Length: 218
Length: 71
Image (tube, rainbow over all chains, first blue to last red; front, side, top):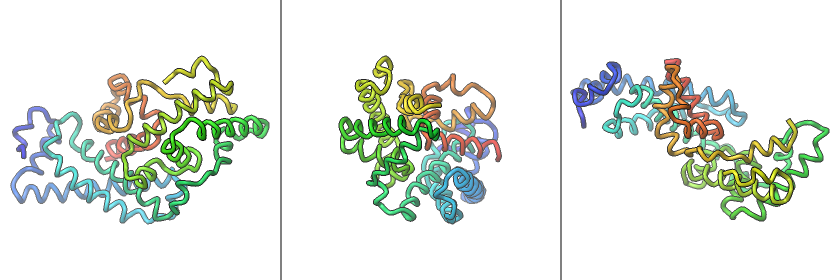
């Protein structure tokens, strides 16, 4: 473990103080960890509440326990990766990132305590029609486009792309919940959706639903 | 907005988009730049492209920015 004086030249004073506290004597480390945990718990709770404000399914969820779990797991990750902190940001920003990412992961897993696994496989295509707009005068166009997207999903996506795209885009399952359910990572699921969008767009352009000129855009 | 442009926008993909993993690796650096008023999107255009279209990563960005500006 690097001591604070090894990193001090590259760190701002507050970050250097944090590293000093977390890598110092046993007493200093204990005090530093207590202080850090208090900050992480506060950030986790605030972040849970912020997420609830923007998410319908979190309305009745008891968030305090999840927040404390996120803070505790973030604390372990931070202490385990302390040597990798290089002062590219403030220490607190670096540390808070761990807790924000833990909040996302915890909520993704918690989703399945409130929803049946079947929502992953549902085929609620009417929702896609609604997402394409709300103007009653465009109802027929929206329905036609939704049917075309469904044909694209059936014809040009792989089974895995079809499952992930339908769950997230059609059924409205949060991406992090799909990540938790499939036991993968966010980047892999995002890439699956990214590739699915490209293939669907190319299909729609080839069949006259969208401009051909932009079909090749990645 | 009618349905077709909305669908176009939804299906559009940006080749500059670096993806979730790369964006999250530098999120703390990106957020600190934003917090002090620097042009983070110019320094990290691929991250900016990603945060604009990835809901979960955009949420993490908003949460981290809120944490550092309110603490």
